[in-house]
Length: 140
Image 1 (cartoon, one colour):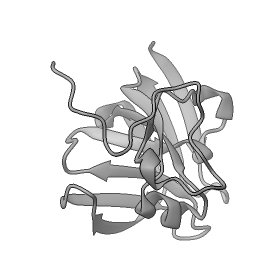
Image 2 (image 1 turned 90 degrees about the vertical axis):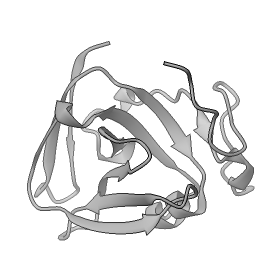
Image 3 (image 1 turned 90 degrees about the horizontal axis):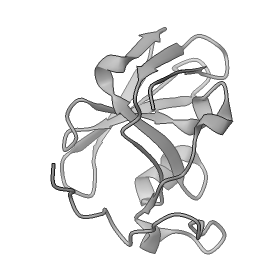
Image 4 (image 1 turned 180 degrees about the vertical axis):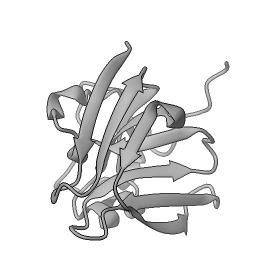
């Protein structure tokens, strides 16, 4: 469903507006998401990159993901808030961290990935599909 979604960092230096349809939303329990988020998982909204208008300076950190291809995480250099990430295996898709949303109710979990790596103290919810690793690619 097309909607307008807004968000930003803790200090307010970075703001964004998303206009358009969401591709998917979900929770990731991989080690990178856990360590970069200081919690048991990362919750993201995947959106078409052109649908996002971003203002403010972002710093980025690149590291190979489970596919061996780079994932770029972007965050505010002032307050450290994680804003987005992108994976080279999903060109044109921007994953917005749900923790940066102005209205947290916008995030509705559709799936959990890398659930086999979830810590005992943060297990995937049972009300959405859960995949031990990444789900298989969907035919177009």
